[in-house]
Amino acid sequence: MISSRLRAVPAALLGAALVIGGTAARPSRDGAERVELEVAALLPMGEGEATVLVLREKGAHTILPLVIPGGQGGEHENELRGPGLLAQTIEALGGRVSEVQIDRAEETRTGARVRLAQGARSLEVRGPPSESVALAISAKAPIVTTRRLLDEAGLTPEDLARLHRKARHGEKRL
Image (tube, rainbow, N blue to C red):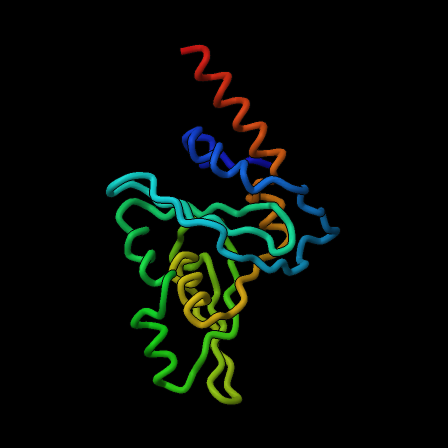
């Protein structure tokens, strides 16, 4: 299912995403199956505009695009390249990020869970997906989601090709 928020993504972005190519997502019975993700791209849409964080299913070609509202994408670009203040603080307190789970495909305050370990103690903190992914990258921790979220909000190469055809068809009408 293609989410409505992605219908507005420019054709150039869709064309770039087509390079990913590959196979479709595998459906699961209950959707609770965990799926590991990796960062595929961080695509700025323009100065002060939204940024698209593209996560890709490891070992497959389904992507999960996360739209980071205008002005916030640049804040996380540096964090995606190296540890930020929060990551350094967690480490200074004797903790480490053990895993990040993306629960929503929107940039909400509680759209992801950051699982922390501090000795034998385990903690879970909710936060925005973009900040949570930045923490996972700086800690070299896995990023996961559920099969259900990937099936609902992810884009397969077939979805991207269909969107690309629609965009090209729409351009011819102008």
